[in-house]
Image 1 (tube, helix red, strand yellow):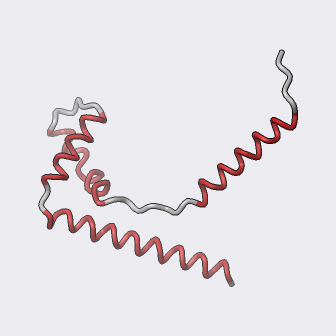
Image 2 (cartoon, rainbow, N blue to C red):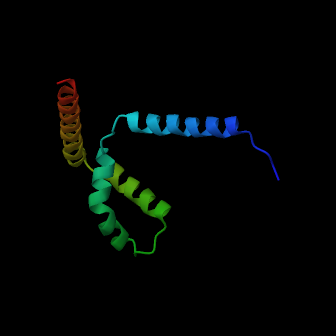
Length: 101
């Protein structure tokens, strides 16, 4: 039987709490234009490719199709990303102002 010192155990618990706090302090990230496009087209690409793909094969095919998209199509997703980011920043400012009152 191995003896553990209570101080060591307490130290490990506080380390875990610090890590949890750091995770919640991270700034939320918006969805990238590729991620938006992929979410909308995943089922279609999978069906066109026969349905029996590994996740890696599916992502590779989707990346190729994203690269092949014209600039105008990509631009619409980039605009949506900008709107999402602006909305997120607005919400953050709103919450911060409410906390200050």
